[in-house]
Image 1 (cartoon, helix red, strand yellow):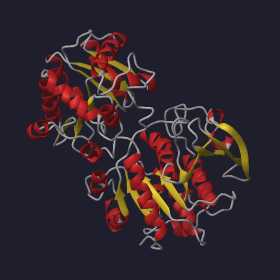
Image 2: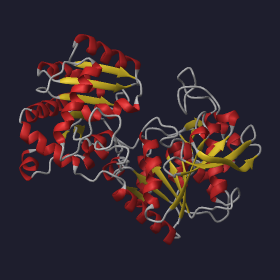
Image 3: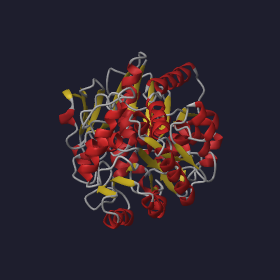
Image 4: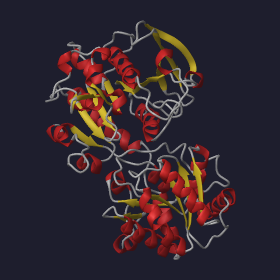
Length: 486
């Protein structure tokens, strides 16, 4: 089976969040099941230089404002990659794949990701390469317009799957931009990609893909409701029989405390005492008091209200009164960055804040902390809590989306049966987060109980094996079916 992944990010080539981790790991996990996958993404600055054996494989003249080419190569791990090399669209310095130097979206993002989707469709239809996929797997709004191009091609096309990593990002642009995207006027209809008078890339994918998936079963149910459907709940309910939730995995070769080169000391569930060496090293690195007798909580996240971190700020005085420590790594809303920095000044030796993105530090935080806080108001899957499980850093999570699917609450029954792996709270309110944080502090004081829970967490299956099997089953079902979207 051959599968084409169309995406705007792929680890380790370019990453702003969990999407990149998924696209970088899932094709490699599927390879073990016999799936031959290629990943198509833009050739942002510095990306081609990371590929091995890169070479031009096709010319693409007149590509949405300029000439372009397809470049093929592989990552160090052997992932097959196709780069859309279009300098007029992607050779820019800015704030990552989507943002310009001013911190706002590039004004031509509709062309940048329309071109990506258009090329995805051309590869899928066999118009560009001799290699033609049996199935097309699209990721988020940046790739979703591929479904529109396949729909309007009016010729046999491989089945398509759209994975919604975060429904909040919908790719909404002015309706007047439709001609520039090489789509007919009929695309802008209520039963097409029209969205409140505008056009939505994501709606094109939801409307015209053969099947939809999200990154956890709970999130798949949540987005059918007005509260979590982000305006798409009606259409998603219509397509609910074509919607599947599959929990993400993590790359357990990269995230492995027994082999992680970023750490002060390697450790495992059988060599758990060595985790304390990482805690002490992290405390020194971040200027925290070196103490083994208080819990060190960490946050590795975008600093936004969606991630619920305003609630953590509200509950911080109570947590500090317990003597606990907090280490934060992330960037986001300016006011929240400022408030966390203020907390670090207010609680020297107890709170440390690093604003920005630092992959090695994120590994050291997972290894050196006792618990990781993920209080998201909604969370399609989440990866940091999975990293926490892998590193014996017990997650404190809201009972939503993938967080609810991956963390077993340390209630009395779960503790007695030895299955607890973290702390859940609901409803998603600051006071309930505070209760969960204090529950974690209380259990931390019972060293043996805490260590038993750490060992249980570290033995959970969080790699891509299970998820890859779920996707393979879904792929096979799509290939076996001739059913088209309603």
